[in-house]
Structure formats: structure tokens, C-alpha cells
Image (cartoon, rainbow, N blue to C red):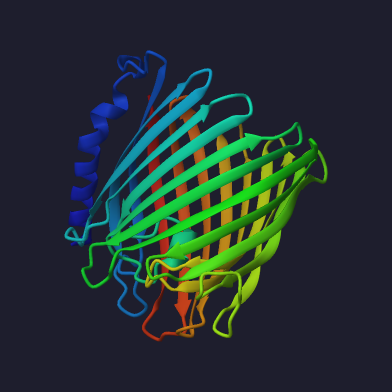
Length: 382
């Protein structure tokens, strides 16, 4: 029975995208009045051994994905604007009633008022049914659920001298769920960073941020850090400080307040022209998307990439993270890993083979899953 559904899914996918894949690239007007327009289409086949994200009631399926990505870029003397949008339509072979398509949009605007002043405005939107990154998988306990995410970020940078500048920033995030039993959640974050760069190889910074959600939970973050090149290709970028909750929304700690170590450290090395590696560690407090509570979180993430042949590239990553809630004593852990190979057939046509492993565990007995996916994709750009 599965072969029948699977064959129909593949046929439907290829018929819808076949023409677009083989239309010559020069048939599209990709430049208009300074706008650089890019189009990418994708067709992919994936095997998922746990589409239900369940510990005990696993169901497997084959999924056809049709993807369309549009992006445009405008760059002037004093300003830049980039806009991109992506839509992935997925068709399950066995469980055709399951919805798992996704869409996303991003907008980035930068404007230089003078050589000393600039602003940057960013808006990100995504609509998904399943987590699309390891970090999101750790945050989303209910893994399969319709989820709308809006993010707005604003930065103002003022250069005070050749080696000193200040960065003021504001961020807003709104998370909406289709489930009426789960209320919408939002949070604000405002802060600043002072940067001192005495040389090209060395930067010092001091940062402060104030965060508050719709339930009036508050935490403050104070960090000091540095970015330093240890060699021409190896550098460390690190911040260390403290996050502390404040029920009074002030700096005065009470018996009900908590403080935790806050750290964000990464080590990056461009080993040679075809090999790069990075490992990062993040610890601190964050607002959970599940119930809005503050989670004490730490995560470690490693990435490695290497060009194996002239047109063949490989990438591997590993992720491990913990979210712990003092109020409920819930502790969630997530282990994930991925490996991909990509081959460039032509300048505008490449294929990829991707494998992802995910393991979610919790001290709540009913929560948790193990999931493996493998995907073969073909991408064409115009």
C-alpha cells in the first residue's frame, strides 16, 4: 500500500516542478532598476521514521517537498534593503491529511545617516508545523503543532571614535499557536553594547539587556566579553556574565529571585581553504515557547565542513541542550546530529543528500521521541 501512495506523491511533485526546472535561466528578468532578484526551486524526497514525534506510537512516511525561494537585494550608497520569502509544500505518501508545509519571510533594512550613525531593522516570520532547527526542537515540547513566529529587531550604532562604538538594540517576539488552549506569547528585549577595538585582532565589549514577557516575568543580563584572533584563521568570541530574574523588576534581588551564570563562547577556525570548524557554548535564561516560563538553558553546538572534491562539499553538525524549569522541576534534554553532502552538477543546479538524527527526553514520562530522517533534494537557481 505504501508503494502506491509513494509513487503518486512523487509523480505529483515532479509534474508540478518539471517545467520550472528546465526553463532556461535567461528567460527570467533577474535585474530591474538596481534590484537583484534570485529564484530557487527545490524538489525533495524524504523518509521520516517518526512523523508523530511519539515515544511509543511511531509512524513512518515518505514525504515529497516542493520548494520555492525568492529573494531580492537593493544596495545604494547609504542604504540596503533585502527581502526574501520561502514556501515549502509537502505531500505525505501514507498520511495525506497531516499538514506539515511551511513558509517564511525575512526583511532587512540598513541605512547610514552619516559615516558615524547607522540603523538596522530586521523582520522575520515563519509558519511551521514541526521544528526546523535543533534549537527550536529543544524549545518546542509539543513538536507537531501549527506555530507562527514573528520577530522584530532594531539596532542603532553610533561610532564615537576610531576604536569605540555603542550599539543600542530592541527586539520583540510574538509566538502564536492554532491550539485555542495555548495562549499567544510575546516578549520584549532592550539593551546596549559598548565595543572597544584597540586593534584589528582584538575587541572588548560590555553588554546589558532587559527582557520581559506577557506574564511580567523579567530577567536582566549583564556580560563582559572579548573577540580575539589567536592566529590568522583561529579566533575566540566569548561573553561571560550573569542572568537574574527580578519579580520586582528592579536590580534589588529578593528571596524569590534567581541568578544564573550567563555565557556565550565560540571558537572558530578556518583550518585551510577547504575546511572550517566551529564549536559554541551558550548558557543563560530564556523564555520558553511552551508556557512562557523562564528556562535555565545551556547548549553546545559543533559544526564541521569540508570540500571533498571540486564540486562535492560535506557538512556535519552536532547539538546537545538542556532546558530546566525551577518552578515546575521539569527538565528537557535534546541531542541532535546531521550530515549532508552537496554536489554541484551545474553552476545553477545542485543536489544534496541529508541525514538528521533527533532525540528528545524529559523527566515527564509521556514526553520524548527519537526521530531519523533522510532526504534527497535537487535545487535549481535562476
